[in-house]
Amino acid sequence: MRDIIKINQPMVGKEEVDAVTDVLKSGILTEKSGMGPRTLEFEKEFARFVGAKHAVAMTSGTAALHAALAVTGVKSGDEVVVPSFTFHATAETVLMCGAEPVFADIDPETYNVTAETVEAVMTRNTKAIVPVHLYGLPADLEPLKKLARDRGVALIEDAAQAHGAEYNGAMIGSIGDMTCFSFYAGKNMTTGEGGMITTNDDDHSEKLRMMRTHGERRPYWPTMIGNNYRMNEMLSAMGLVQLRKLPGFLEARRTNARVLGEKLGILGKVMPPKEPTGRKHAWYLYTLRLRGANAGKRNKVVEKLRSKNIEGAVYYESPLHLLPLYRERALASRRPLPETEKACRQVFSVPVHPKLGDSELEYVFETLKRVLA
Ligand SMILES: *Cc1c(COP(=O)(O)O)cnc(C)c1O
Image 1 (cartoon, rainbow, N blue to C red):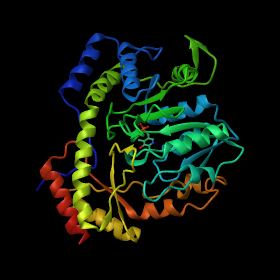
Image 2: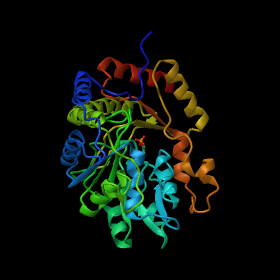
Image 3: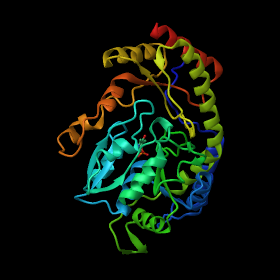
Image 4: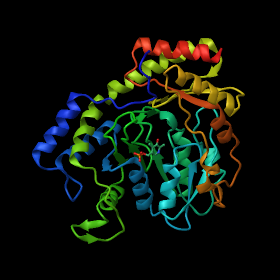
């Protein structure tokens, strides 16, 4: 019997172990300013990687989203447009600011919100737009950026799944007002838990640094409500190693996705993921769509894959606007979200992570072929 092929798993080697051990031996585990030597280096390297002026390390992707919304000034009475087809932290962080998440529908081919679906739910009260680069594929950012500029609202990207993705030749992280990344264990690069915000704006960068250390302008002198969102030195050291490995991870994901895509294309039973011209997918998840399927049939496919030791998975089974926490909120679904609801019933993801060798990829394809027959 083969080992279970996980949907995603951390890729950690001796280099990470050594880097963390060095920090433990050095005695500097963190700095109360949040700016220990490893953290500053990690931020500098991450900013360079995405081509942004600043990068600010955080304790998680969720902390990053919350901080980005907070320094934008999102507060009670404000609305923030987010997808309903996403991990729920995207909307949760809006609630944390006391504001209302308003859900926009998705494009059925890319699973991302578009300028049209976002504009359809905007009002005078909209303060920010938070597109999610779902599964690692960038949303169509140029029209979203124009919309945000025309309406005077912030464009904050949820790039928790999109490290290394590109849009029209620019890296994700260099485009919007602020871009939020996650380093959770299953993501394209990891520190176990962790996050990063990139921005080209000096004022945002300064406020984010305050936000992460209790709103302090200088030690023990808070001038805004903040939190403790500091990344510690062990995690920053690990992040530096992971960042260096990221291009290799991405290359392996891309190769696996291409090989699988070619084979599945011939099969013609499922809709493989799209990668529109000008966009480079980060392949965090390889997500297929069963045409015309009801959720029951899709769930059976996933169950069968699991019985063959392949961790198929559904992201996301329920759209946020139908979850109890959001269902009762008056603004949550200002418009019906038919494409979101349909995608939730039809999609499932299969592994393409860098640990997959040729024979495992072949096994994933052959098993899929049999399950779909
Ligand atoms: C993982 C994820 C987050 C949250 O990141 P954490 O580091 O787990 O807090 C937010 N949004 C999306 C789309 C994610 O996939």
